[in-house]
Structures are given as structure tokens and as C-alpha cells.
Length: 129
Image (tube, rainbow, N blue to C red; front, side):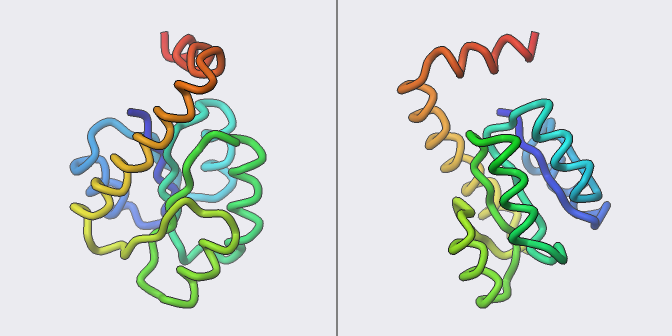
């Protein structure tokens, strides 16, 4: 499953790649939004330390409306903010096992949505060929 990781920490992006398999990565919000718009990934892992969290989640939802945005932060206030802004979930950045589990849960939610909208899923799958 295609996952996009938007995080300025290169080591975290590499570690996420090792834990999750092939992924898209972006070190900036701008690059992440462009990748999301082009590839329409079902899951986006977003660093909770981004300076403009509300704008970033809004842009991701605008350009990749089917994507399940998961915000990575241990800060409780930031977690509440992310959920209030429409993030599908929040998780501490240090636990790759939990991140992998959350990606699986988000993928299941995406599969459920795709089953209800098969034409959109088919269109997305066609972009992978």
C-alpha cells in the first residue's frame, strides 16, 4: 500500500521506509502536498511538528481527499489539535511498530471506502501501472 511520509527528519524517513516498505517521502510540506496530489496515497504520515498544522492538513485533504492523515506527535495538545482538524489518527513518533499498526488500520479504512466507490479505486489503481 502506498504511504506518504512528510517529515523533515531524514533518519525518520529512512526508518519509516525500513518499517513500512516502499513509501513516498517528502522533507517539506510543499513537496508532500505535491506528492499527495499526484499519487493520491491512501495514507499520509505527517510530522506533528510542522509549523502550520491546520493549513497542512487542510491542503492534504483538499488535494488528496481520500487520504487518511495520521499525525506523528507525542504532544497531547498537538494530538487534540490534529484530531480536531480532521486527522484520522495521532501517534507518538518513536514507536514504529505502532505506526505500522496505524497504517494498517488506515489502509483497512481506505479499502472499506474504496469498496463503496469502486470507480475511484479503479482510477487510482490505473495510475500505478
